[in-house]
Structure formats: C-alpha cells, structure tokens
Image (cartoon, rainbow, N blue to C red; front, side):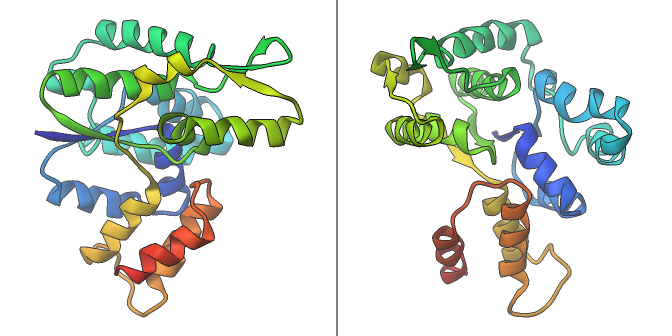
Length: 225
C-alpha cells in the first residue's frame, strides 16, 4: 500500500482553486490512500466550520472525508495516541533547532508535525508515503535546513544559529506540493479544460494560493509535460 498524507496548506490551496473534484478523481486512480491526521482535520474542517468566511471550503473538504476520498489514520490501523506521542517529540525538536537573539524560533505547527509523525509510523509499517505540503518553511526544514537558516536571517534581520544534530529526525521524508498534484491531474486528463495554457494556469493558480513554487520550477514542470 501507498499513501499521500495531506497537510492543511495543500488542501486549502486546492479548495480555493476549485480543484477538489479533480482531487476526488485523482484518488480513484491512485493505488493507495489519501490520509489526513486529526490535527489537520481540526485545522481545515472543525475550526473553519465555526468561521463564516471559511465555512464553505470546510464543508467541501468534509464531504471528501465523508466519502472516504480522504481518510483518517484509523483507516490503516494507526491510533491517534501513537501519532500524538511522535508529534509532540517532533514539535519539541523542530522548535528548538533555530535560535535568534537567544530565543527559540518556532517553525512547525502541530498539524505539520503530525503529518511527519504519521509518515514515520507508516514507513515503520512498510507503507511508502509522501507528504503533500505547500508551506515553504516546513519543506525547507525537511529538505534544505541550511537554506532555511539563511532565509530566516534575511527575513528577520538577525543572526540565526542552528543545532545541526536536530536535523536527523527530519531526514528522508518525501515531500510533494499541490503543484505536483495539479500536474498529475492535467497529465491524467482529469482537468476538463483544453488548450496549451491549461497547465500554466493550474500551476500559477496554486502558486497564488500559497504553494511555494518558483517561476523557474513552473517552467521546468511545463517543459516535461
């Protein structure tokens, strides 16, 4: 079995661009599970349902959960208590890795950390997984932490130090973004639009809704279509 674990950022990007029906179609041809943790569920369904501005998107995502397009970890036999323990550990390490002016720089939310925790548990159970996350900070923390140090120094205008020994628990995760998902939707003919500009429009749409993808990366994806 395989799984894609969805962080709130990716689902929000797809929802705001009206691409949840295409996500549903992608699930039909995916040989595996689309999973959200309960921490992510609280971020994108439970809390938004109490806020009028975000209620509609929350209802649409809840429908995907009701229809089992998205599933909770219990669907693969993983208990919330197991995820919670690992999530707490990862949050503690992550938010003690970067220091500025003698203070810890808090970078990872419980929802993001729960995705990492679930991925670790799945891998331990011999289930291959990827984490769909659009938020740049988490992706850089996992993939290029030293570049994140430089970015933080530039944004915060302070010297940032790092504890390199903290990188080890965050190595080896497979990260994808809504950009890769919309590329697959387009490649598999799930987007019911025709014309040479469709892929470009999809990639820019998710970029403008929070996907951390550069102009050059968009051009690279378009070249491989």
